[in-house]
Amino acid sequence: MNVAVLKFGGSSFQRPEDYGRVARHLAERLADGQIKIVAVVSAMSGTTDKLRSVMLDVNDQARPSNLDAALATGEMLSACLLEAAVSRLGFAVMSCNGYSLGIRTDSDFGRASVESADPGHLIAALQDNDVVVAAGGQGVDHSGRITFLGRNSSDLTAIVIASMLGEHVCEIYSDVPGIYTADPNLVAGARLIPEIAYGTAAKMSRHGAKVLHHRAVDYAEQHAVTIACKSLMNDGTVMAGTFVTDQGDASTVTLARNSALLSCRSLEERNRLRDFLDQREINAVCTDGTGLCILCDIDFALRLLAVVGDRSLFVGSRSAVTELGCTTLRVHLEENFEAAIARARQIHERMYPDSNTKPLCPSAPMHCATHSSLLIHTNNAPENRQ
Ligand SMILES: Nc1ncnc2c1ncn2[C@@H]1O[C@H](COP(=O)(O)OP(=O)(O)O)[C@@H](O)[C@H]1O
Ligand SMILES: N[C@@H](CC(=O)OP(=O)(O)O)C(=O)O
Picture 1 (cartoon, rainbow, N blue to C red):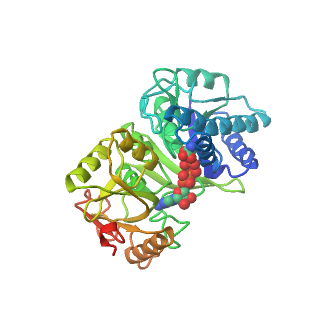
Picture 2 (cartoon, rainbow, N blue to C red):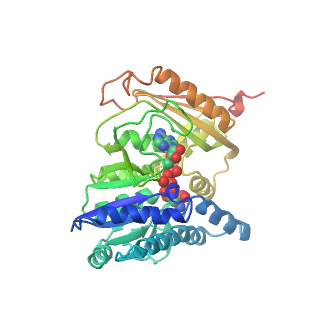
Picture 3 (cartoon, rainbow, N blue to C red):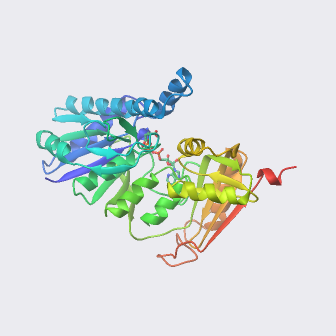
């Protein structure tokens, strides 16, 4: 059975009509009768934040397992809506959620890790249907409780499903056709990167580039799944932008809007916390003095630190701009988002002074060495303030 695995994120579902638009695209893909489709969906744009906030309004100490079950409903509803839109076009379709997808996780509520994937149920569903719609970002733990794989983690669900079905490509659709040298919605001269290595894409993601989830990229690399980033336009055409494979590189600027800055009591404590987070695949960078800035999976990280009883001082949110050159990595912390955007534009301008003619990685060959230095520049870090 030839199966195409397509993922549509929240940016593809701004309004209810968008389910019909995506369904028509799936119908076109089915037209030659040669394939079946698994369509992985995220919650409609903004839904996860709303669910989280209403839960915390009811109980700001809601248990993590309770919160996960609530957040997963955003994707469950979205899967039902796409099922409805596809069935309206006359195709055989069913939707699955965390309870039936075959994705088993640990019980790290808030950002559970995938432990195993059993394709049995999906294969059976594909035998009876043209399309199976899967709710992204969820699985079940060993006790049968629903778990949330973390913010933006529907990408991970799509890669896990592609891998469990033995497919070598997974198509990820969003409001941009691929990975750019900077967020194209914030930096006008950002350039589309046609092919990028898993390691570089994952690093960008860990520093705030939202377009792909870092754990999805890591999983794709481990299971040899090529990620094809695309965008479905309003007129139904598809723009194909970036392949994430084992080669290709580019200098990039990324922006993590709400990073969490901690002020630790000593260098030893700071280093210990950084190692603790690093072991859990959470990117945190050391700032001048004893500061530590967490750049991804913020809610999960802050809860973990509270759980282990650390008394580090949470200073507040910062916007982090990361300059990822082919041989260097610099993080700049800014007090607010506007300053961070200005900084990102300035760095990108310097990186690509003439964006029409310069190669994507101006100072190094296509296969760059891993970053040789970690240079952290911070502005307005607490110890620098009067
Ligand atoms: N380097 C980058 N290249 C492309 N998009 C980026 C980059 N950095 C940040 N983004 C942002 O990622 C967004 C797409 O990711 P996301 O909103 O999570 O999509 P989806 O909801 O479809 O999963 C874009 O709208 C863009 O603003
Ligand atoms: N519930 C997830 C959904 C997700 O993966 O989002 P997206 O595919 O839109 O990045 C979130 O908003 O965190």
